[in-house]
Image (cartoon, rainbow, N blue to C red):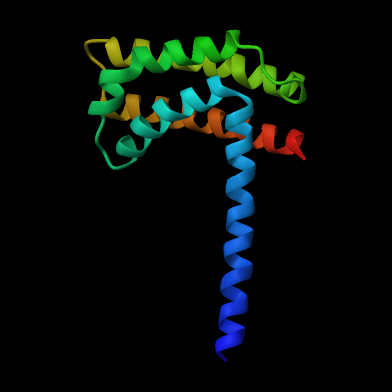
Length: 134
């Protein structure tokens, strides 16, 4: 019994570690994507919990990081039309999010939808990079 439990632990740990290594290597290969991810993770996760203060404070930074990502020299393996298109949408949607945050009569629901949509585009980019990374 002990050896079976240990075996499954090792298999699941190794699988999880392998997935982590793949994600890390994408971010290591494309530093601007990693930088954008930092702002996204620090603003989206609080927004999921109803705390919009981080995105309200950092929407301009998010917009700027998306612009830097769009201008960056992506690794060759990530220079596909699908990834380029998604990065353009990320830049445009980041600008829209910032404009929504800065409007005087914006509802929390509008901000939450905009950051959720932006988060979806970011995850699309990461997924496309993982597909190309193999």
